Image 1: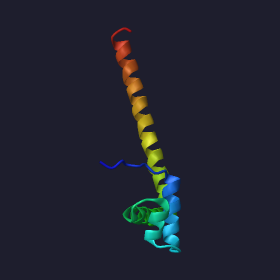
Image 2 (image 1 turned 90 degrees about the vertical axis):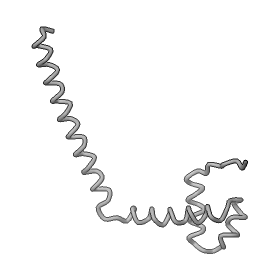
Image 3 (image 1 turned 60 degrees about the vertical axis):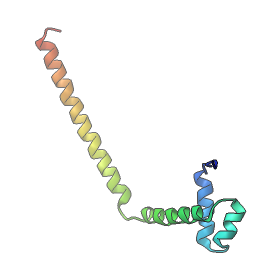
Length: 94
């Protein structure tokens, strides 16, 4: 059974960038870094897909707004539960 190797993100980025530059073929890159050409193709595709997110106009702002809305909702729920706890504590004489 073949041993699986976990590659670091920086290594994947380095190889994908070289593949995107197109200065060497996939076979040459695979031989240089001792990895399968299919893996390089996968990393290259992931890099291209990830670039679209970087240049997305409002992507980061939308995520921040959703995150802040969730935080406000959770704070409201905490406040509600605190009031209920205090009310029930007084009702049972604690």
